Image (cartoon, rainbow, N blue to C red; front, side, top):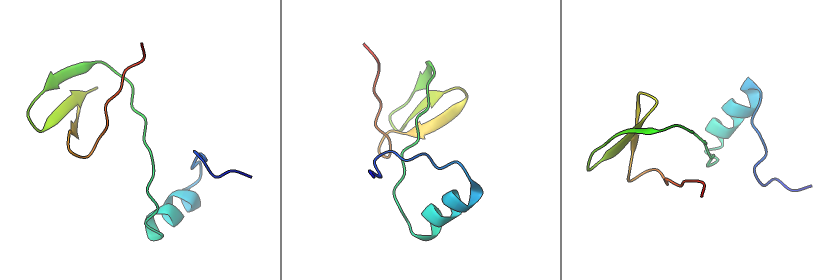
Length: 58
């Protein structure tokens, strides 16, 4: 069984990932509302450019 991109669907899975310090991936879709030197705003939330990867579907 592969562990690649296994969804975390329950509280215990999320807390286990937190306790074990397992890196996770979060996908957010939306339109870019604002761009600064340090962040990109999507759906009212700011995402730090240094900590995120931004991609688009072509």
